Image (tube, rainbow, N blue to C red; front, side):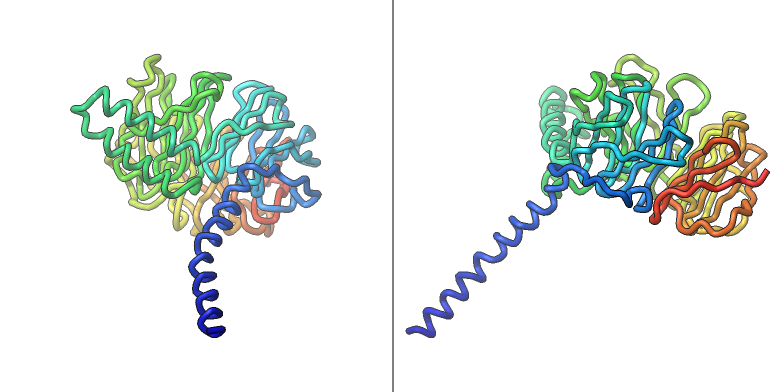
Length: 368
């Protein structure tokens, strides 16, 4: 009887173990949305995903909720107060004081003091729940529209997966109107400074729900070129005051069915894209025709920027730094020595670049 009791106890314990483990795992996964980023003296030496400048202030974002800012051209950095420990992937400031940042777990953050402190406006848990309610309402109001049930299914899937999808980019047109784009075609819009975020899946021609990685402005007010996964290119016109009439249409002439992580507009109105396997292409007509960019072999091109003098800079994940002086028709490798792996590039003061990667922020001088 003692043996049977012991075996029975063991079986009961095993039966209870999965739910307890699942509960512990769920708690672990979502704690990062509730716990603030930890101040760290090593933040400038840790993983950096993006570096950008707004006004006279530089910002760098990284893992574990790190947002850093610098007022001396990137020589010294201060860590901001951030309410989450999610990795932060992008940042934008439409005014000197008001800014937004996005990242993993579908997090959207907002600052009203120039990026010194942040609050959470949105996360991936809300994405699925609020998105489902939004598309259920549209489906009820438009029973003949067969697309809305598909979006309901996508939101139900998002609920089942939890807060597992990142936003890759945020872009603000004003202090009230911002777009956030990310994995699996996620697109959100706020028109009230972040009090509400509205799903925009139905305004994007992306039936396969491919990731959207980057965007660049096209000539003409409110027009943008979006690039993403598996050769996804979109031309968006968001100039219409009616948000339901703003649409991003797929570009069907694509140069390569690989993923493109970065895009940059040139001084003459073209778009230069970089992606997997170091592939780079240029279009001067919003994707109707393409030119292969002349460049040395590199790793995947993960970021690019246009300098104040019109030159373009693109970086490979393995540390290659490329420069173009002809509006992106060709790039040559800059002789700046070994910089390690790179995720991000920004123009620094003078003739310098700020590079971000797994080992933090590095300032380098760009050869004339």
